[in-house]
Length: 309
Image: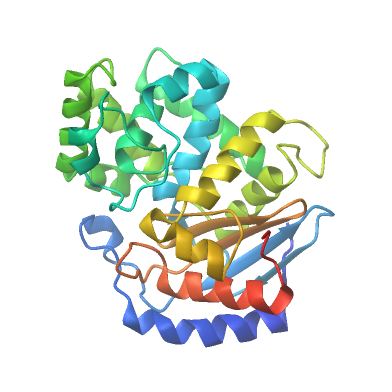
């Protein structure tokens, strides 16, 4: 798909790029540490098939926590709302995305929402399939459908790096298994979770996912239903309330569009009903969000009055 460069977007990217020097690339996952701190790019995909871009939108990066949006959609399709939300809550948290604190004070010990690590692990645990390979294949199929790109796959070096350093996530899993929130083998779950986070995409792929969500789960090009409308609504709502970690409230005020970030520097955003947005900027702020990406979306939202509020 041809995606044309947009001069106004390019101007905003260059203005936002100045903020990248104030951030840091993720270093706790060794394979992510090699990213270029100054990278910043954006693609917008419209429901009429147009695409505009600025920066190196073909550069590949891993989904990381952006994958939580997609696994939530898949788990609800597999298990239904009632079962999913009997094991994970719907409320925002002011705690960091990898915190264990709330699990120890909640009764029952279920995570507050699907966008923090504990909640995402519970959600991934509910994906249907007989093996890690089968579950991952079903997730990739959903992503292939949403992006119209069957070349998307796992970046195995990142997956291995995350698996080798996933001790905090293992701790979350064992704690929740003790309380009956997680079932099955913890190492298999960590294997699946680290691979889902290491699925490799471009800004254009993210924008394509975004426009399907913005369009209530329908592919705007083929008019094929990929997600049930109710599920698209649920995941978009979580993106607003919890998608930017414990900076989601401030982001809702400053930008005001459903968004989900990942520690690779990815941000998936959307403007209902017609625009999907993909951003990549690996320099992160103290909350774990792309510092240049957040600033870029803020400028974009204010210039074009994009806030849904």
